Length: 282
Image (tube, rainbow, N blue to C red; front, side, top):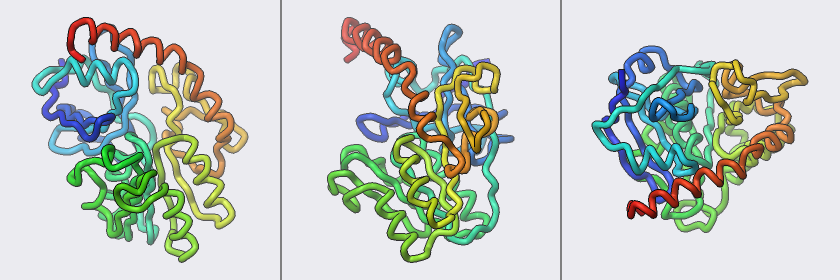
């Protein structure tokens, strides 16, 4: 059985949205969990955050980062089918009444989690605050894909100040903390930013739950690729996470392991782009 693409849309020059029929996932998925998709029979397994899971369909935000994400963008259209989607995988977060709940994000996976998490937290009676950081105005998502509808307060920051506030979500988080307006914070996106967030919130003892997006192969805990050092023990992001207490994560180890295959990924991407150029696709 294939999984039909029902919608596809550019979010920015670097990110796009894809919606796929996957009723087996929507029946069980909860915020914090992820899926793994495979484009074709010989394709790689790609873990992906979920933006929405409803009416038998899941929505995903995807960055044109590697060969597979580029192949999905250029070769698969609405009506086409993906070979496989597995999920939901990982552990869901605990959704309950915390008070003031913040979600901060600065990259594609985190932007999807921002909406999904705050939607559930708002339904649980929390006051929700969304902070979404982008590089510039060109990369800010269309309003209908932002977390604004599920946030009581919504902030956009850009590095150059072209939209919203100039700076990063770390700046807004710091201000909110100083005003004693944060009871718990969730975050996703760039690992370096998450490491800085952990250090920012640690002195205040504010619970900080972040997505640790390590390199995965199978996504079920069999390969061990996504292992992290957590509170002095070995954990697996796919099975024990992907969201963890940021104050217990060894971020130095996480950052080191996340760069293991940079050269191989770059080479695969360049070869695929050469193929597209030769075909006149780009």
